[in-house]
Amino acid sequence: MERSKISVRNLELSYGAARALKNVSMEIRGCAVTALIGPSGCGKSTFLKCINRMNDFVEGVRIRGSVFLDGEDIYDRRVDTTLLRKKVGMVFQQPNPFPMSIYDNIAYGPRLHGIRGRQELDGIVEEALKGAAIFEETKDRLKKSALGLSGGQQQRLCIARALAVRPEVLLMDEPTSALDPVSTRKVEELIRNLKKKYTVVIVTHNMQQAARVCDDAAFFLAGEMVESGPGDVLFSRPKDRRTRDYVAGRFG
Amino acid sequence: MREGMKTKQNMLCPGSVMADRKKKAVVEGIAQAVFGVCASFVILVTASITVYMIGKGASAFWKVGVKEILFGTVWKPTAEKPSYGILYMILTSAVGTGLAVLLSVPIGVLTAVFLAEAADKRLAAVVKPAVELLAGIPSVIYGLLGISLLNPLMYRLELALFRDSPGHRFTGGANLLSAALVLAVMILPTVINISEAAIRGVQPGVRAASLALGGSRIQTIFCAVLPAAKSGIVTAVVLGVGRAVGEAMAITLVSGGCVNPPLPFYSVRFLATAIVSEMGYSSGLHRQMLFAIGLALLIFIMAVNTALTKIVKKGAENGG
Ligand SMILES: Nc1ncnc2c1ncn2[C@@H]1O[C@H](COP(=O)(O)OP(=O)(O)O)[C@@H](O)[C@H]1O
Ligand SMILES: [Mg+2]
Image 1 (cartoon, each protein chain N blue to C red):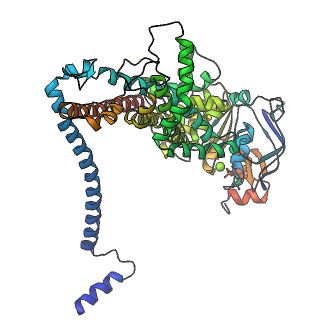
Image 2: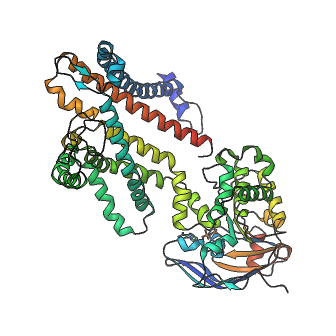
């Protein structure tokens, strides 16, 4: 078996007294799409944010256990979260472009990491926009505000912005829940293409969507990871009764 | 009687979407009218102030001449052969306000960042009420403090700097620099409060996006949050300029009061202070001139307002 890109061991997380993740262990393959499913409030977003340590900013959060990325524990004391987040990008539920031009949105990440050369930035911006399949729509208006784009375009712009720092892993938290069906289809298509180069972990509410885009899937319930494995197995022949009930739409 | 009962019953019939549309329309109409009256009242006040000031101020411009007033440097309204040039006062107001804004905007915005992003909650809990207190202090108190604390210090500085220049007219510390410092402190609470509100109003997604791209906290504040709060911060500057330009009380006490070009260690007179200090004994054309100065002040602040708002609008179109 190939080595996992991300390997989560005995992860425990609590917000104050409330336990949000209970002893979660799981392997995530490289260059594949892994979908996290489960009813709302079961800890999917929390789990996702553990992979780029965005939970660090929440007050009163306590995290135990380890998350290995390419064999390195990202909760080790020596980890520089800046470098971690450069390697592990994130796309949010609500499209959140900066109130700046399209160009400056994409160039934001590279600039943070010290890239200043005009030509180099131009190249990165074009590459990122192409990578997120939004170059054709925006190439003539790069200097215009990103807020003038439609919701679906904004979300692809946010994906492009994440790609611009050349990450290896892309975390997506319900990236299409605020979008219309046509935009959703475009983003799903994009996700299937992204796995050629990136490891994608996507949270989704929508079982059909999970089935359409994922290679692997994991089912979460009340802070526990109940079952994980290849998507087709999880959706058609789940081992755990709770997974079977959820997939069949019997609760949540 | 019967008829009336019937309609009433009809209306109360559960699930019916019928209603007394006329009554509703009347209520809506009255509400509309009330809003309209309030709004027009504001317009009326603004318009009448402008018209009144133009009416009162324009006559002096008419009699003395626009060029003589705006570009004349000699202000001798009570001399035998009077001269009504206010160029130095205009420049003093512009430079003094500019200096004050230059001093207080960086400090104010950084304080606002501290309050809004509060790394240290306990310190923020002390700073916040201090800012509010500062905003409530009457301007004449600033003047008194300026006279008793700032001017002596400024005088010492002046003595040290101009020891070897016999041409210098010593001001006792009441000069442009003192006035600008006092103004800066006075507009600080405005700048802090408005900027803080602007920073707090930035979408949380903006911060999250920057942090998730690997930005540090400081990078996130300066590269993402502040640019996103730009228009609010410009509003803070506009209000600060407005307060500084119109301020007379404190400035009268600390600026010296002679009509001079606006150099840091010169005793100077601002537009607003001229009105306050001369109105009591003025008459005739001199009095009309003071209204003309008021008009100049009004136009000055409107121009600053319009210019800054234009800049923000333009920025917004090109991606801000
Ligand atoms: N910042 C937070 N502070 C406190 N509790 C939180 C926070 N974020 C999430 N939670 C709680 O943790 C649990 C898991 O939430 P979340 O990971 O957002 O679930 P999901 O994404 O699966 O809907 C929920 O009970 C939620 O109320
Ligand atoms: Mg969630």
